[in-house]
Length: 177
Image (tube, rainbow, N blue to C red; front, side, top):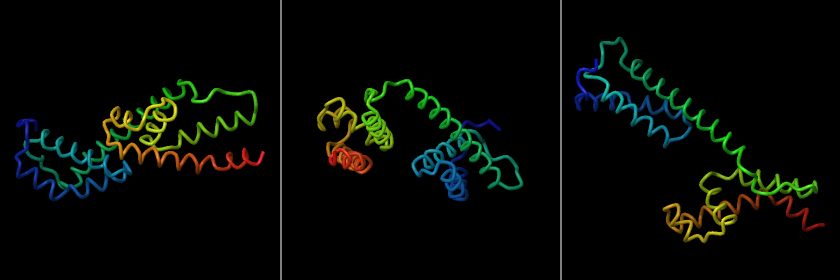
């Protein structure tokens, strides 16, 4: 089975034409993210291309190739779960953004702020933290993250809008007191 390091190109093209749509749909079901599904599809094709001189004699080629895709998707999901577990463990060890307070109202506000920041998408949270807590300018953030200043500006604007929306009840309560 591993006689040739690479499957002949016409055979790989045929497999792509015949089965890539089904494999992509399977990957989309697992990942719920088009970019991750595309990455898995590419990895699937590389795995098939490198792993076989020719496909073994099987009754149902599609089922055989989708079984490979499914196993690959399960492996991807396990890696994602492991990453999330370690990421959550690391996050729980980090100090909180805001120091706890003995005043219950301030403590509630601190928890609301931390929750609101944690609920931001990762790219927006990163920009907001660099701007608000680290005091970097948008140009400095753009340079640091290797992004355009317009991208950084829009991420910051979206983050602020989401924080305002989530923290609006607290703002109204502070304003009325």
